[in-house]
Picture (cartoon, rainbow over the protein chains, first blue to last red):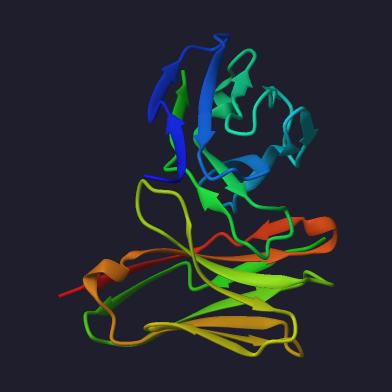
Length: 114
Length: 111
């Protein structure tokens, strides 16, 4: 099925550990992005990419790295996990970042840092 | 600061009833406003999109309206069904295509 695939669905990390959240899309979308969703807050943009080889910071980039070596994949790396990074993470993709085409979201990764 | 505020925070209605969710915004200028539906444990899915010049847009039992004068949008759900139980998020595309998300309204439809 076409769409955005995120793995893993759930993850528990200890403070200081690192990990990579995977995101892949098969719709040939140029624009991909990572959001975090916390209770009582709207989704917040972490990093985004407008095409392979191009990434940029969003609203809350600290503690996260991204890369975009292919159009399909956009992994999010947590360098040294902290309890403040406990959240639900969503990857989204679109034909462009104008918002007009809408975003296709993955089903999310629920991360707990203890 | 661009903000999108939604009300109510949560809502419980009986199956078959109608309801209206509100979105007040300060984002200006903006190119479009979308309503998304987010089922529990899933990512948001787009329901409607309106450009800044549109007043209303329907998608089945969902009707979104936009009043640029009062800076309000609403999502009206007609003849609610159990499957409408979800969070509904208002999202605006502003300057430089920056998205501003509302915090959502959690709707529960009961028998």
